[in-house]
Length: 427
Image 1: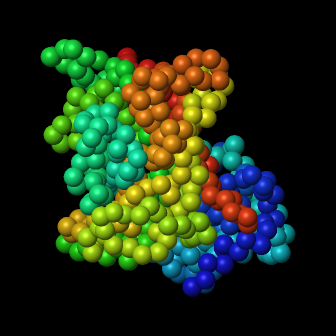
Image 2: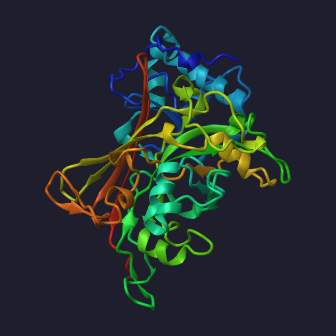
Image 3: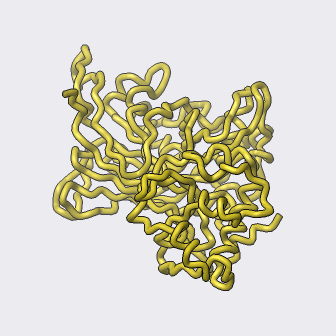
């Protein structure tokens, strides 16, 4: 079935600025709360959120097999469960409805007043009920940098890293949408030169520049997903700031890996950009050497050219862009991650989220964490207001953005923005 929604020549009757992340060729999916306190599933074109539940009630999806309440729910899980054919049909239909040449909705002011909301009048919610969350560790540059700092620089990558997409099971209960502030966590750390740990606020709070993909129901328990079929089970992508407490992490991560240093908060962008929308931006990933085992082998273009950037904005301050990276640097692809994840028969469900791991590029200005950008705090970053940062301060807002662009179209994710607050205090 063709992806007619991607037609680069299509224009919308909604005015969209040239630098918008959300032209009619994007059509992402999300969940929002309207000013009337109604939660609905929606999409976005330009600076307008569109109520898909209302569109469905008014029969604009006639001819597409959907349950009656498909878009009148508070999560996208059921829609994602319907599979790739339904996602494409719905996205193509939305594209047709908002085409500048189509008068059906364009000339019906009453219906437009019901389905369209200015973005400033809605509150974005978590788009899916995330049952399980896995975080990978798939940037060779990031893994090498961390290995040099935490272990032997001559053996920065552990022996397994070039053979498997390394990952760990995260915590879905503390995944929040953009705009929700995050508290500095408390935890155990081992001060330099000491032999006994102390308990208190983490002093080394960091961001991790990541993306994440959202899955549909992929398998039954015991079944694996072949790498060449994995794309059929990936609905779309979001930006992910996987907050980290580096001092807690350093003390706890041996022998079982990340725990409290990671599970206190992860922030995501609220609009899921579909893999169909990202199709024009496919590109080849890095050469994999040694060649992976057969169940992980891929040919062709299996990554995406997504420009990424991170900024810090101090309280009452000026925003400073501190990193520019790209998703195409990832060593292990999303398909390889999903194939490996299910290779032992692990079940993957609709709404599960898989983080990419920190995305670092080959140059110092493309590193995806403060740990790398300041090299463990040894080289502080100077912000535009003149203040310095080794890690993230209370009151700082971390802003991540991502977009793809070619000569025809720009497709973006918006942003994931979250402010770091002091530790939570019980009343």
